[in-house]
Amino acid sequence: MKKLFAFFMMLWLLCSIAPTMASDVRVIINLSEQQALLLQNNKVVLISPISSGRAGWSTPWGNFHIVSKDIDHRSRSFGSVVDATGRVVNSNATPASRVPAGGHFRCAPMPFYMEFSPAVGMHGGYLPGYPASHGCVRMPRDMAALFFQRVPIGTPVNVVGSTSELTHVRRALPVASASRLGRFLFYQKGEGYGPVPR
Image (cartoon, rainbow, N blue to C red; front, top):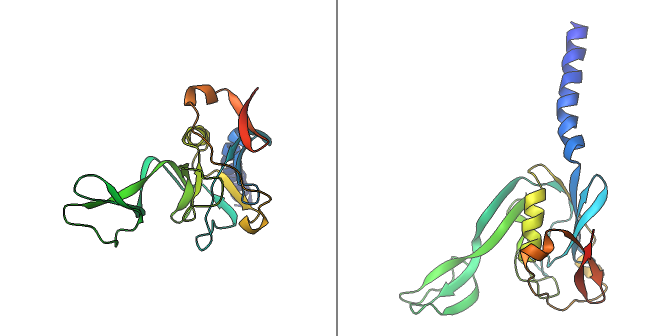
């Protein structure tokens, strides 16, 4: 009986450790530096600028795992109100916001969503150069696509640092072409980021 138990324990250990050893992917989100790092086999393979949660909506700190992924996610909590002509009349709305006659609430797009805490995840979005989200970790859309492609469900996510420790504020970053990003790493260069050939 003891040998059978030991056999099943070894089998369980091998099955639970093998997937981790095979991919060995993890994400570190540094709130102080406003960066997300993708590590594979303990080597940094991608660094992306981010915009984390603003005051009152801070990004949770600690150790998490990717629990779900959605390539075309829409927020159920935030978005904009559009009038009957299609003009945005409230760009920071909730489903409870006042909607003019003929208008509607439009859920905020969160492309390449990778949830790591309840209703909080990494996704493509605008980076104004400082913490500005409702708790999520915004990344340039193209970088979010690269992270989404390489991060399986179950990937460890470590959120470290604090927005109160920000060393400087960056200027807003333009969105780059995905075709240019596929074979590059990113590094901080002065106030911005740029590609570095592998």
